[in-house]
Length: 228
Ligand SMILES: [Zn+2]
Image (cartoon, rainbow, N blue to C red; front, side):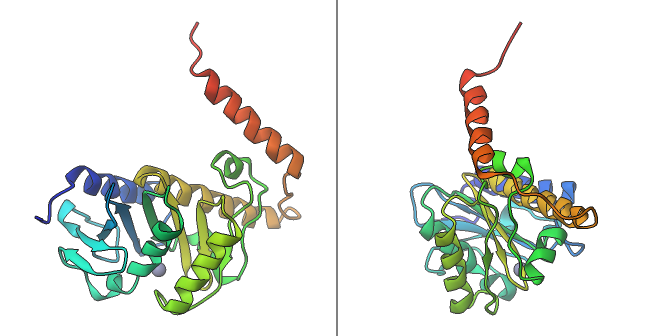
């Protein structure tokens, strides 16, 4: 296998990473790592460096979900986090891409040891009506950290993101664009929730209205585009 197989997937990851940098859903250092599942295999492509700056198609390595390097190169700090991505693919067969950042506001919740509740409608619309759970701390990529991520995924089967206590955020979706969008929505929600604190605190959406919001979204989506 050459290092540039799956060029379209590599480009989709780069586009997702650039989207997060462009929208500001990233920490000041632009630290992050991004992976995509190679369809029909138990392999993933993972960014080999720890920054979203200057990513190129050959900046991704191929690994299997047990963490073995198949092709390409990976730097030591990213070798540490391989299992953080793999655990999501193992527990969520529908997930095609995973992104990890230290996006500022979401990570503020993580270091305060708090999950995020559902007070912002965009979270509902993006399939996180139950909010974003917190995975308890373990050293980066350790078996303790991975077990805690698995427990958080199990605790909230619908979520598209997990906050990593004292660390950052892990977001995922069907493809790199969806994973990046999940990270952005969580970041946006975290920012607004923190700002709402000075106004008396965010007010959760009542459960019956959460359901109604999803039904309305699906009804309009099913009807398709309207043209006059
Ligand atoms: Zn990190």
